[in-house]
Length: 272
Image (cartoon, helix red, strand yellow):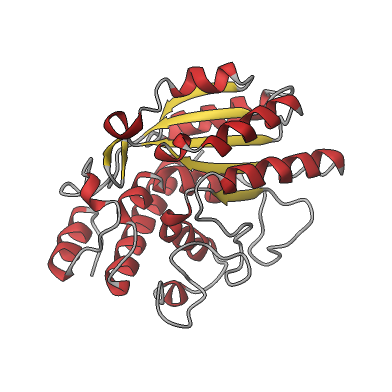
């Protein structure tokens, strides 16, 4: 694993996210930044994908169940070569395919249109089951927000995934502790996340979601588990990488202004 390469990609993806959300004047930077390292690892280290053949039969698939964090997936796909970065900068503009939530019919590399929380996770279970029935080696990766775990549909899907022994499915929980209305623990606690998944028959790995060595270990262990799905509970910080955004629920769905953008890019070591 080239840790330095991944760190640089994650840094650039964070900058891309902030520029796009600023240009749009709206969007969700906080949860995009918290997930940037996870998404970077998936697209640049973990997944069997090909930007030149985005629909290849045996590809791995990533589902962004917390669809409001679309900017981080758009940025990763652009950095990976699925399209030019200039296209992503039309985020949320009238007529753009780069909508506020991912649309599988508009953007190459998007496997599922998501946004209604819990549904992306449920669809990933169906996709994993289909691959298993078809003897397709492609693996499924799905990213959930921690507030998303408050949706009952998540636990119905978790039960089904365990029942069918979907070892080709890995769920990652972006556990930044915050949601649009504040702290998870105040709104509706989701603790203990790991124990909940274990009780539903999942293999559970708890990590630092900003540590590439932890991510490397966790995804390696997930591949070795051949009888049940794996949940990686990744502890993260909302707004990671930008001091005035970190651990602030107010940055869940607010765009930085020009001054804030310049300060954020400076902190990330980029150029405006």
